[in-house]
Length: 81
Image (cartoon, rainbow, N blue to C red):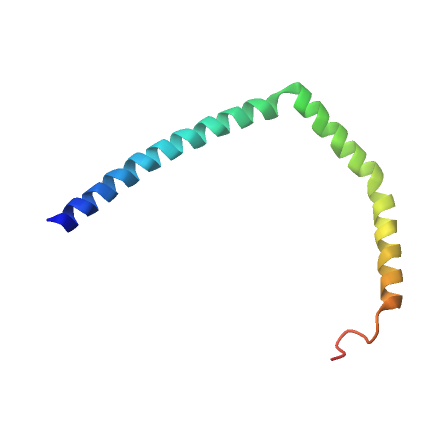
């Protein structure tokens, strides 16, 4: 009888926990949608995208330079064991 009681308690706990977890998830999702829809957030996101697009060529060049200088400092080549 104790095994059946334990399984029943686990089942009830799981159902109640899943319901509570789903409600909390829905609450968080509603807040996230509200925040994302805020014009100030949209403006900040647009500014961030613009800044990233402007800096992308510079970052690409610097990464290329760093990779080139790092390649000159290595010993052995790819596949060398």
